[in-house]
Each structure stands twice: as structure tokens, then as C-alpha cells.
Amino acid sequence: MLPEEIVTKKAELINYGMIRIPPEITLPYYPSRSSAGPGAGSRAMVFSFSGTRIKLGIVRDKPAIYTLALKDNRYYNILKHGEPYLDNVTIEPTVMHAPGQAFINITNECIYNCSFCVTPNLDRDDRHKKCTVERWGELILAQANNRNLECVAITSGVKVSPHKTVLDMVNIIKTVRTQLPEIPIGVEPYLTAQEDIDILFEAGATEIKLNLETPTRELFSKVCQGMDYDGIKHALKYAVAHFGPNRVCSNIIIGLGETDEEVLTAVEDLAKDGVVATLRALRINEINMPKLKDALGFEPGPVEPERLLNLARKHKEILDKYDLSTLEFQTMCHKCKSCDIVPQQDL
Ligand code: SF4
Image (cartoon, rainbow, N blue to C red; front, side, top):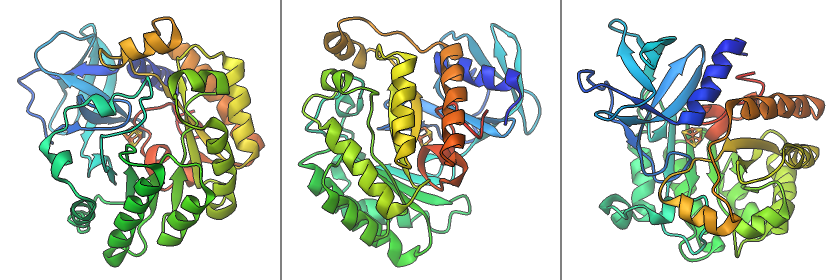
């Protein structure tokens, strides 16, 4: 658990989402440029402090509220408006996308068009154009001797169909298992068919994330048109029967106009089924704002830190009540902690 002051600062940094690293500071690692997740499309780095992490977009030559300052050979400080804010910060290397994780996104292309998601709008750079499923398997295995590698995770847009994406994931899992038979592997597909869960489990996936995205069916139908809310809920329940509790999780995005009561009801419904939610603050940018405004009928804003902290505290109570633990997860976001206030770890 983090001291109150530190977890509040993490929530404030999540709310702002970026940091300035002055040009005179030489970056110790290449920034990651993720094609999925909250900071998709921007250059970002992971910062560690007090046993937690945060992934922030970085700017070098533009002003920002938060600035990184060099403290000594090992540590940095984060300044807010030029004043000391966080002490003893380190920059963490990522393996692929996240610290300790070879977390890949098979494709940016997607037949759906969720309003909050920027992934299909990103430049389809050569890496994604040319990266076949076989090549992704090779790229993960190229990290097999990386001493930082702790787990593998696979997400993807839905290029052809949910089933075809699942088959691509199975292909990659089988490749990974040839050289890394024990490594935890997390998968994050969109699916609703029970047989797709069966084949991912049988191929050797360890954990699964099936994103409900919103706490209510009504909101889902506005922002994820063409996808099946009840199908995801049924799939989550079925997944727990296979993978077990503390191995199935689901993102719920905060900031789309839902109430706290709706969020907590959804979190508790999931917990009753053995599913651990990830409450994720909406990230807004010039790509998703027009889509969000069209879908919701208003312009959403960043999630206030107090709201995020309040929801995380209540989320923790629910997980404790149903004997669930974010600490048990071995892959993906509960393990990484870079983008959310993680109950039972951050507070
Ligand atoms: S918390 Fe999840 S989305 Fe964020 S960097 Fe880590 S693995 Fe990626």
C-alpha cells in the first residue's frame, strides 16, 4: 500500500497523462510507442516510485505541468510547476510495451470502431504492416534471454473476425511455449464464443482479459457498436470456470458519463463471478474526442483524481469481500500497475 500522499500524486499524474523531459536529460532507454492501451500512439516512458509505476506520455520541447529533473546518477525527481513533487523516481525499461512483459498487439486493424479506442486510427507503420503472426512469435522468443522478461501478453484488434484473432493468438502461444514452457501468458481478445475460450486455455494461456468496457449495456451500445455486451459477460463467467479466479479480468473505462453507483454495481457483479475489474481512466486526445462526442452527445473530460481514488477504495472493499486479489495476477495490467490505481497494491 502506498502512503496517501503518494497514491494521490499517482492519481494526479494519471489525470494529466504526460511529463516533460528536458532535452538535456539523456533518456536511458528508448521510449515505448504503444499501439494499444491508454497511451496508444504517443511516445511514453514508465516511471517507478515508492513501489508503484506510472506510464506517461513524454514531451521534450513543449511546456507541461510536470517536469523530470535529474537528481543523481540513479534517481530523478518529478517537479510540478517547477516545485518538488515526487522524489527518488527511476525510469524503468520495458521489454515490449511494459516492464517485465513482452506485451504485443498483433494488429491495429479492427472491424469495430469503439469510440474511445485510437488504435485503428494510428499510422499503420511498417512494423505492423509486415508483422505476421509467425514474426510476432519470433519477436517474443527473441526476448527469451532478456533477464527482465517475466511474462508474455497478447492483445489485438479484430482484423477479420473474433475467431480468426483467437486462432492467431493460439498460433503465437504455441510458438512461445516451444521455448518458454512455464512463462505466464496473458491474452486479451474480444470474444463471446465459449469454444474460443477453450482453445486459448488448451493452447496454454494462463490468464485472460475480456473487456466489458462500460458498466452498463446502454452505455456500451453507444460506444462499442456492433459488439455483444451480454456475450462478453457470459464469456467472463465461463472463463473463470476454466482459468480459475484471479486469472480473469476485465477493463471498465471511467469517464464516459457513467455514475459511481453503476461502476461499483458492475465491479461487484463481476467479482461475484470471480472476475477482477480494472478501472481505467478514459484518456482523451484529438483522435478519439470527435468519436466520443458523437457517441455520447457531450465532450468528456479527464477523470478527477479524487473520483479515481474513491472508486479504487471501494473496488478494494469489493475484492476483499469476494476473496479476490489483484496481487495474484502474473500478466497484463494488474501486474504492471502503470496505468491505473490498482486496489490492494496502490491502496
Ligand atoms: S498497465 Fe496495462 S496498458 Fe498500461 S502499460 Fe501496463 S500493461 Fe500496458
